[in-house]
Length: 417
Ligand SMILES: [Zn+2]
Ligand SMILES: [Zn+2]
Image (cartoon, rainbow, N blue to C red; front, side):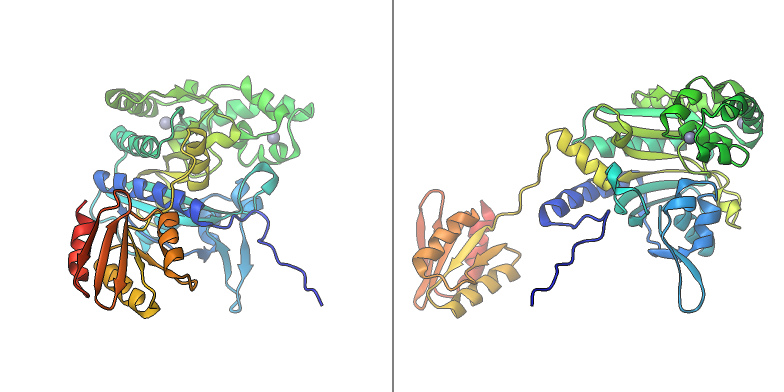
């Protein structure tokens, strides 16, 4: 009786070794940059109380309204799989009273879950790396965060990067803007030019209409009043400061008046990096300032700015930049023998000395083992017999005979060149 096969759930991507090598590269480049910038890694749980995201990300967001994986556990607690990294990090900063010495600079590497529509090329399980700077409201903090993201993305091999920035202002200047925006949007809502989601959001979160992906809504958004014209003096000065600070480090940017980013917690600076021709799926990194988040979650009033890079998006952009794959490591040496236990012993000794050594596990005879050494791409071949070891440089064909058991010397010779 044949049983039916089980496949991976929709919207998930299995991590085959080639993909994982790309991911590890992305992560190691990022973490190395975090080291130079002084951002220490912190971890949060994969699930949190749903309320954290409802309050932190904001109730009127795609994430909370449509995309969060929520469940009630056996104790009746409402939990959610982490849809993003910022709310959880804010929680642990509050819970562990970490904001005593500022600035507090943290980085993270997480798996996130959102019930996205897989048809749009989005994953329901995906990976993010990010960095956040708590405690400084100065424009230099914004520019440090943007510079960290930029240099890391470049070091991953992503070329054709473009940076879009905007300022969303503070609560005060946004109130004036929102009034003007609602006055502009109302006739369009009445004439049916806005999608039903936007109409329902207009009273609660009218800014979100500006980043709706519906073509008709986008047309309306294009001619809407610009937030930049409503910024108060402080917000205008902050925005100028961010731009001047980016100029100082030589990072080019485009000012995008309609860049909102789909999360409620942002104020002042928002930014995104796009790769390639800059299509909707080309966003590899998004971030901004969220000065009110800690207070919103019941913590101290500390300003913050940060970003997240989508690892899968970054890998797509790397491939578009010509970096197709990272080849697997080749063994430095292949240990051959007609007695399997002898190959076991030799390989174990070399591996114990930090050498990547391969040996036969398939019952090959000695001739076939020599061929296997070549197929692996090993640089050295060791033949271990009862009366001694033969060490052969596969490239040059040079051979030398050594005493049985002289594995330390073998390791020294082959690691030397
Ligand atoms: Zn303002
Ligand atoms: Zn819409």
